[in-house]
Amino acid sequence: MTKKERALKAVGALKKEYPDAICSLVYNVPHELLIATMLSAQCTDARVNLVTPALFGKYKTVEDFAEAEVEDIEEIIRSCGFFHSKAKNIIGAMKILRDNFNSEVPDNIEDLITLPGVGRKTANLICGDIFNKPAVVADTHLIRITNLLGLVNTKDPKAVEFELKKLLPPEESNDFCHRCVLHGRAVCVARRPKCDICSMNKFCKSSKIEG
Image (cartoon, rainbow, N blue to C red; front, top):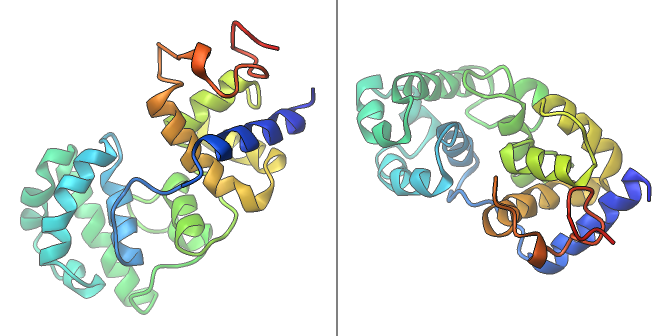
């Protein structure tokens, strides 16, 4: 079985198991997803979702965030960790959106990664979820699962992103990433994967019951 064939099998298996491939972060408008994703670095989505209602309730627009006091943002997001740098980056990113992008979130990776605190993972998430473009969000779950499947052989996020872009159908790539997150939390758990109930155990390179 080639890597591409295995990738297609993985896409099909996860689509069947998790038909609703949605982002775990709660948001209403594009800049809120951008900020929530920035907050999710080294923090769980569940924790971010506890923090953002107060944050987005107080600061409703890009302009609001651009003019915010860093100390106030820090206080609201403190429980997300690394709150000093995250608060600074949020305000800095919103100032750039206001001044350079007419307060609109860019629709391409090249512009997005010019924002402070925004790397390729966040940029891909925005392109995929907001603008419905083919995207590969190389988070820890995706990297772990695709290595176990034998689709990639690297832990480098950018390398994983580019390898998977060669293997995944473009129209399926973004949803596949979301489904890998769901699968990583429910079944292919780090250090204790439940291979016996995994929908991919017949073709996963790391499964003890590979078919």
